[in-house]
Every structure is written in C-alpha cells, then in structure tokens.
Image (cartoon, rainbow, N blue to C red; front, side, top):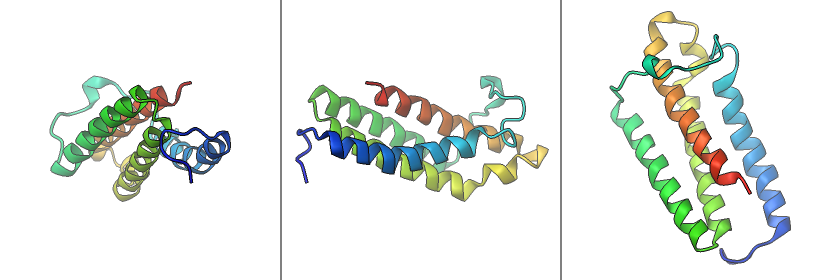
Amino acid sequence: HLSDSEFSEEEMVEFYNRDLANQFGNLLLRVTSKRILRDGELRAEDVPNDYSDHEKQLIELCEQTFNKVLGRYDEYNFQSGLHSLAKLLGELNSFVQAREPWILAKDNSKHEELAKILNIVLNACRNVNIFLKP
C-alpha cells in the first residue's frame, strides 16, 4: 500500500470504481430521483432551520471533512483527502438509508423533514463534486 503522499494511477482507478461509482453514484441516485424531487428542484425557502442534533452533527462532520480534505490537497496529499471523502460518503449513505427519503416523499406532511435531509445531502454532494474535479 502506498503512503498518503504517493500517487498511484491504479489505486486512483480502483478508488473511483469502488468508492465513487458505488457510494457517490448510489447516494446521488437515492436523493435525486423523480419520486423524491418531484418538481426537479429544492428551493432554499423550502428548508427549515430547525435541524435535529443528529443532523447538526452530520453537517459539522461534512464541514470538518471538507476542511481536512482542503488541508490534505494543500499538502499534495490527494489520496488521504480522497479517502476522507469516501468515508464521508459512507456516512451520508448511512444517513439516507436510516431516514428513507423515498418514504418521506410519499407523505406531504413530511415535506419539511424531507427538505432538510435533501439539503444536507445535496450540499455535501456538491462539495464532494468540487473536491473531485481535477
């Protein structure tokens, strides 16, 4: 196994195929399907500010991870940064699995709860995407 500062094209391909294709792709599909985003968008005014403690912890984890990745990239330690992103994607997938937005989307009374979940996950995905650009 390579040290974090070393770069291996084979390891990058494996990482992209294993972690990104599976975790990131699956996460995006689960929160952007037409069943969930019926009108194709999530407006800021639809998202309430009353996040639960668990949701606040996940938001904080996202911020900490993005700061860590930025630091790793500044050090040219790309593999460590990418592995941190993969770990975060796993946490986000667990969050989505537990909250089941596809079930919430069927109940109009759960619209605010669904909007909070989507806001957290879509913002995190947007940031992950930024870090994955070459």
